[in-house]
Amino acid sequence: MSVLHPCLRCGACCATFRVAFHWLETTDVAGSDDDAPAVRIEWTQKLDPHRVAMRGTDQPEPRCEQLQGEIGSHAWCGIYRQRPSPCRDLKPSFEDGETQSPQCDRARARHGLPPLTAADFQ
Ligand code: SF4
Ligand code: SF4
Image (tube, rainbow, N blue to C red; front, side, top):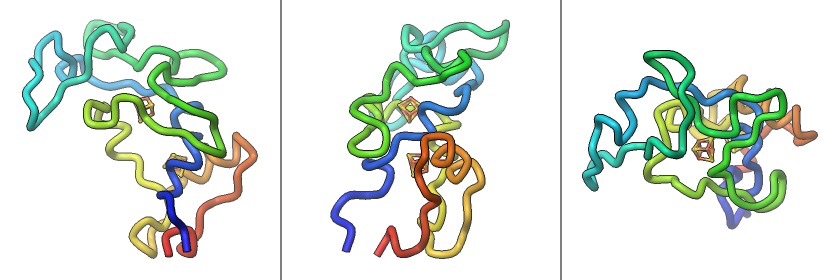
């Protein structure tokens, strides 16, 4: 039986994709209340007039600056409650027991990790 959630032994998606989102999600405009914590603007870099990216992810070998630990063994988001929408939207494969996530599988493959199966959540 797994003790840790599989994402806490992974972190691959935080070091695979450019994490881009609308600047309305940042503290520049959203403020920061406890129910809907915003992404701090200093954690991001500007991409264009409308979008920002998490620092560290807009490069050939991405690694979000907020990713803590070591990929594939012990990794976690240092700003979990304030993570942006792309991070909230990316679900691990088979977390619900039946849905595969191509992004999760691709990120794990990039880091030499096998795709998750439903057994990883039992
Ligand atoms: S790649 Fe998949 S398992 Fe790994 S942290 Fe991201 S969602 Fe979780
Ligand atoms: S904000 Fe957190 S969940 Fe999103 S890419 Fe960075 S470390 Fe990963």
